[in-house]
Image 1 (tube, rainbow, N blue to C red):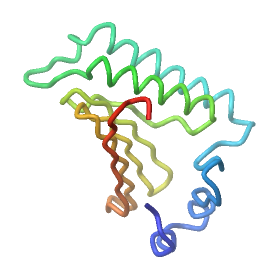
Image 2 (image 1 turned 30 degrees about the horizontal axis):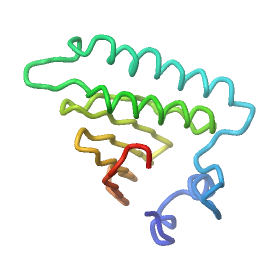
Image 3 (image 1 turned 90 degrees about the vertical axis):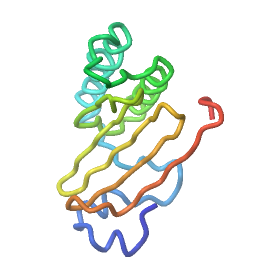
Image 4 (image 1 turned 180 degrees about the vertical axis):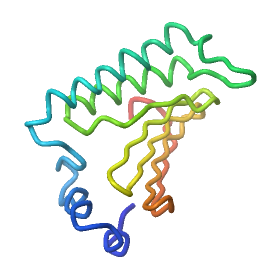
Length: 146
């Protein structure tokens, strides 16, 4: 979780970009001028990566690497659709982790965020500033619908 001392290390535009006062606030969102382009980027990610990986998981098998599990891909698609609909910025990339999971990655200047949906039903969020880990959080999901 970001705290006041963490935010002090970030540049003023990033600090403003990330500050929120309530759980319903749109954090890390684009304004409505960018909505259409941003939603198209999310849809491209869903169609060209997540769905394609589900259709042809064998295309990702490389030596001892495991492709994303169907359950993980379904949850990744759900997350991507909800994020698209809430106008959250599209990630710079989505990648299989080689162990049955999927990672979404964002970058804003010197800030890098990774959201990792792991095959063991753990979801982790790591935040880096200048390649230094400044925050990490994880949750073990008992049921994916939580």
